[in-house]
Image (cartoon, rainbow, N blue to C red):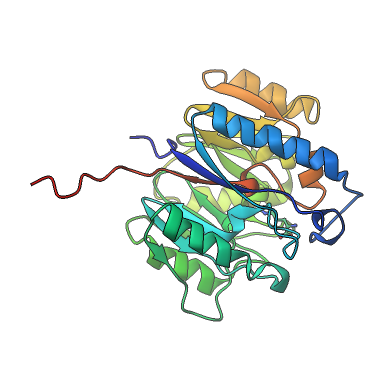
Length: 276
Ligand code: CIR
């Protein structure tokens, strides 16, 4: 079964505090527009067949909409991360409860107190992990990821000038990496290609934020042609075998967020218990 087939998604609604207190705001956020864009994103996740768990907005955590950073879920196990920024540290508490109690997933914690790890730095290709060593994720965090998922190769990739590894490259399908054309993204890709256990094709996009896509259940969610026409056109030309769905996400981008940041995708398998 493809690694990109999912049954559930976890998202979190946008609190009022997002408008002024999210980290890294680059220009004024239109909160109503942000919520509309987020609602369309959630609707798109439902359309592709996911059971979406929507967490309530948490005013004490202005960045709580960026759930991806709080846990890495793969192969039926959830690793609770250790976000680097103090204002985000406690976002994991609620996520842990949902993963454990609602989704009944085995949860792994990081015991090394020096470790920092954010989900935005974790790229899972379906066969192996790459983990960005960034301002948010350190080597101890990368080691914690490797020990939580020993069944997959896990390779650290040093990144420069971007928030996370997935701020400049993501999976656009099985074995296809969608990468930005910015020099730092090309450098990161070179490191990936040099160290990878498997081989990948690439699609290069001129717009860095457009390189963050979500591929799930045969559908590619990407930044809309209204926002990034050149990048959308390239995706339409090169990946027309998938169902493509363009999304506006300008108001998340203003706080350095992108499409993948706003969900944790999960494949929950049904176990047959006590059949004897
Ligand atoms: C932050 O700086 O932590 C948030 N404003 C943006 C986090 C984006 N998350 C992600 O790319 N996975």
